[in-house]
Image (tube, rainbow, N blue to C red; front, side, top):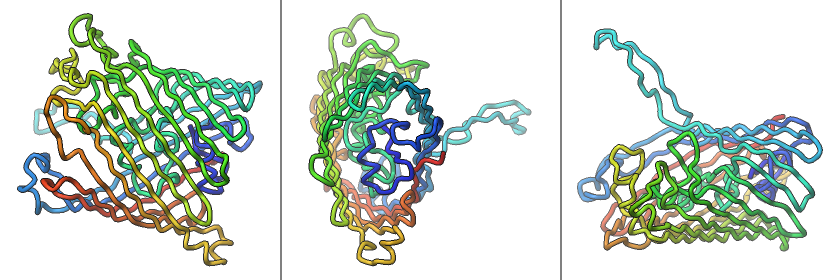
Length: 425
């Protein structure tokens, strides 16, 4: 699902091939190296206190807070073995990676202690072997990106205007969603299509504020596959400059954990997960417009609080909150390249997009057993600019604001970022 095209001549080209493999659009060499990354600064003009939603009046006038961050830094590597066999991998460092170190504590009698030096993640986001039979038929085996929704299929930072990935899809679904499985994909005429067979999501990781977002993660050395899931995606390019996409997921989630409980809720209920998504991208007349709508259903949601691993206080899973039967996210953004009206800047391939974005989402869209978490319903707007001094780099700045229900305090912020994506070898 790598959105890299040689030197990335335009943002739309990256979107047109986002579902294809690293090697499919590399430079034609046997070995290729590429990647993308983001550097971000945020100033949030709202409280970061843990009780800002449970006691909103007490935190209405709390001071602002800021942060520097490296949301993602990714390295791609690919190799063409010949005869249709290729290899691809993606190693991702989120928030600068993680670090643990030993220290000798003088104030504790010189004892050695292991301490966490920083938070973050290092993940193998893709690792696969692919056999290409024709342009219409490819088989991919390994750890792959699940292209459900706009952000998962086109998650590289030049594929959205905001400094951080669009919040709605990033809240209710895994992002980037990657799992081990098998994928069949190809192109025929004006269509691109893909079908995947995967391990099911793990209901032990579902939450009230993130729905199934962490369901693909495992605290174990392996992904549990007691239950299975399937993902589908189809994109159409019939209209010049316009891409239309449909995607979806189905799988069972209760009991897809270790150890597997032979009795009780884990055995009695299935926890069906269904997600449907529509998205589009349009580029023309110096405009780029993107939009998506996602809706999700979780069966047996009222039983999740009582599954075995969530009842065990020593397990690494969520324990207390209910999970919603439904979740949704809708969003649209549009940007106009004002440098297109200045010939010298246009000839130099510089771009300056002025953009606006609106989205609405709720990971807890239906109350479970009468329990409400009203602060999860969010409407968000953002306005800003994206400056491209060269096609592979974007300098981003935006003002955004989350609008919550009247009981709570709205959440404005200013975000600034620099992002790149491209192949280097």
